[in-house]
Amino acid sequence: MFIEYGATRVLECWQDDVPKGDTTDFYGAVKAGDNEAVLFSWVEWPDKETRDAAMPKMMEDPRMDIEKNPMPFDSKRMIYSGFTPIVTLEK
Image (cartoon, rainbow, N blue to C red; front, side):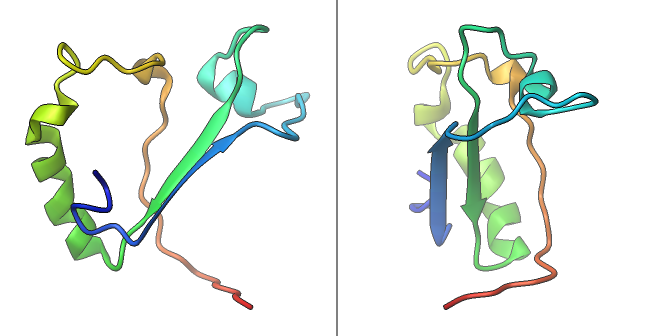
């Protein structure tokens, strides 16, 4: 759905090398239990304007109705943020 609304790339990643930290870590950030995995995802947009226009449209999209399409995880533990790139290195 992100791509339909203008995103250029979506990445969904399953934990592979996620160490437990002494002060903080991904497990603590989402209050993951011992039997839970941590996933990390991000969406790349061509610009902030496209992202800002897409978000309300996606929230109104019937596919986002949790009653009809329940999420397979606890969405209350998701962390949402927007970031502006400050360094981009590509091959």
